[in-house]
Picture 1 (cartoon, rainbow, N blue to C red):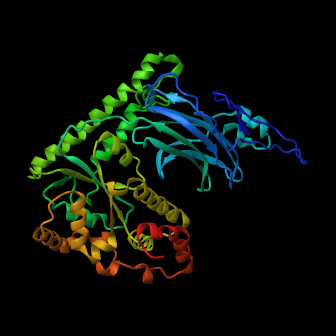
Picture 2: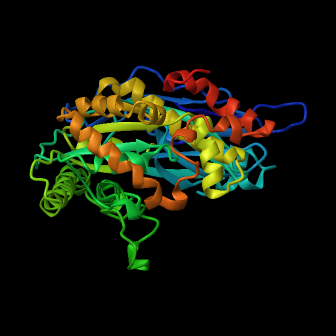
Picture 3: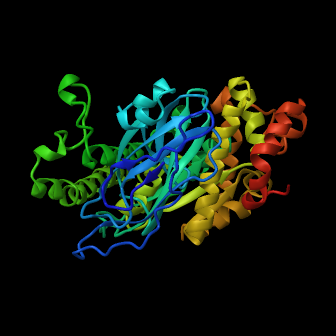
Length: 460
């Protein structure tokens, strides 16, 4: 299969004869021809390259039909279309992914008679199309998007990638209080860290130890930005379900005048982002009063490493601090097994690897803008670890205050109950050495994590 080098989204499929008269395809592996310059300088997004993966394992054929090289967008929204046909297992969904975080997920079920025409022996080829819209807020000035498809048997594979450039919004801060996110992968001591940081006079947060500090108001609003300001799926309507909040406009694009579309995808996005920022700041400003912390400079929330909202926050807020909370991956899996009595199959390992990959990507691309907090460092050398963290936040690190804070954490085990799965905090470090006994689980640890250990600061 090869896509034409014109600006059209139409797929051109070429048929070649084989001895068994089966249908094959020729696909162009990349569309990195010279980008055409836009006719105006007011573009927000510009596509520089589109490439189909050249080492398919479970994909018979596929294409990224749009966007195309040289295409420019005057707004922050973009729709990605294409098709994909599985070799053995049917393809169920397509994920648009940036930095190992999913921006959106869509079903692979659109009718594609052109694909079925050239794959008549594959009944599922008739419904292999996909269409997904994303809001680019949060993407870096030079970005890469991966289209990752999920098969019926649960496996993932990259169909292809899109590279481009964009102009971020220039947001002004509506408050003196700044966002601080504890980015975590789970079972890494995040609840302990939240407990410790909740006692810092310059930090406010929602929730408490009873709720395990899981209240995430900022994440909710940052996710709402994508819903409220993104392109709608005109194939469905919130009028069919009044409990559903649809995206901003939901009519077919050809039924809307271009001026309205331009406003929806530019000015309306900026207006909504400003409103989202104000909502978050106003809530946490009220928390400053409720928690009697008049000198508060940060609001703190937990956020899973694979949530795209943390990238959205980096554009909605001029300054964002991120504490990347990790633990030896083997210990994470041992703790996970004890906590939820899970069978540690490959799906669990694959998901945790994805979380760690997102952390590694942030360490490489954001550098000093983020702080790596390893669970082992906090347990083995708590004073120095907290001192380094407070220095990163440019906050006072009085030794007496740190001692008081650390002493308060001694009763944490009684508060959390079953949330803690080790006999003591000290024995939780390196627990995998005695908790993971079967060769299969240990082999999966080696397979999924060994190439990441050095990048996370652990010995192989």
